[in-house]
Each structure stands twice: as C-alpha cells, then as structure tokens.
Length: 215
Image 1 (tube, rainbow, N blue to C red):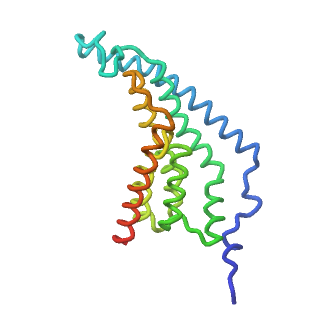
Image 2: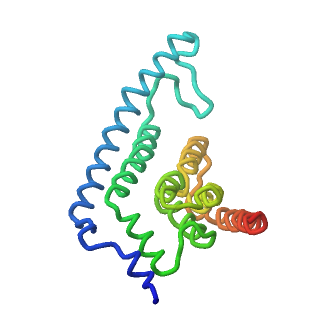
Image 3: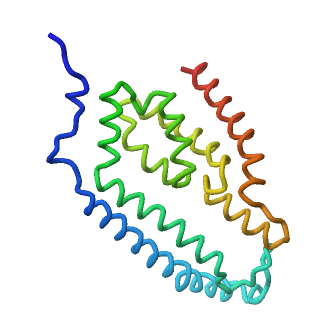
C-alpha cells in the first residue's frame, strides 16, 4: 500500500485563514507596535533618563559619545524603537494567522523539510533580510520539529551572519548607520552591500562547512 505524503500534509480547507482576517491581524499588530513604540520611546525613555539624572546628578546635560544630550529623546531613536517593537508585534500577528504552519506543512508535503540544513539556510537568509534577523528566528523556531536542538544552532548562526547582507538584515545595522551619519560618515545601501555580500557568503560558507563536518 502506498501513502500519499502530500495528502497527509495538506491543510484542510476549513483551517485556512481568510485574507481579510490576515490583513486585520497585521494591521492590528502594526498599530499596537506603533502605540507601544511611542510610549516606550517617549514616556518610558524620558522616565529612565530622568531617573539616571537623579541617581547621577552630574550627568544631567552631558553628551553621549554620539552627540546626544542625556535626558533628550531623539527622533531617530524614537523611530528605531517603533520599528523594532513593530517588527515583533507584526511578526506575532502573522504567526497567529497560521500561514507559517501552513507553509511549513506544504513544504514538507513536497519533500522540503525546514529543519534540514539546506532549506533552513536559504529561508534563514531570505527572512533575515526581509523582516530582520531576530523576528526571522522567532518565526522559524517554532517549526523546527523534533530536530530543534541541532537545527536551532544552525538557525542562530545563519540568522546572525545573514544580517550582514543588507542594511535591513539587522536593526543593529540601521543603528550603526544612523550613528555614523551623525559623525559625517554616510553608509548607504550600495556601500553596505559591497561589503555585506562577500562577508555574508564567506561566513555562511564557514557555517555550512562546520555544520556538515560536525553533523
């Protein structure tokens, strides 16, 4: 007797999430991230700086290494926090739609298993440069299956080095580019990718070789 693997992995039609619900969840998550980012970056950030000024009075009005005054909330920092928090919230909203689980089931039905080194490397690199590397890990980690221990190591390494490919591959890249701009050093997409491509390919090759040797 033969077993249709694709049929066993197929997601029932009743479990599919309507498109309007997906858009609603993503919109709701984006708005929640925006509100949370404003609160944390504005009220929360100012409160922390005020407490720091009270604990160390002589630091009030001093400048940090990047030229910002202690106690001030910068526009760039506010937008960075909004972006960072928004990524996590939207990521959670997408996960709640069930689309990620459906995609993993579809791939498994076609013989592509997420926990295998090849697919994990490709998806890790792609998602890291689409939604940033930390949200990519949060999205992929729950679907690694029984081989989560070894695959988790692979995912951690791949997402870390994949973040070097594009400026959006890691929030840290954007922060560094912003700080460099304040010092008169411009880092645009083209300049970054000229270094990012060879560095990313070289480090991922090392990861691939090490995982194949260790496995």
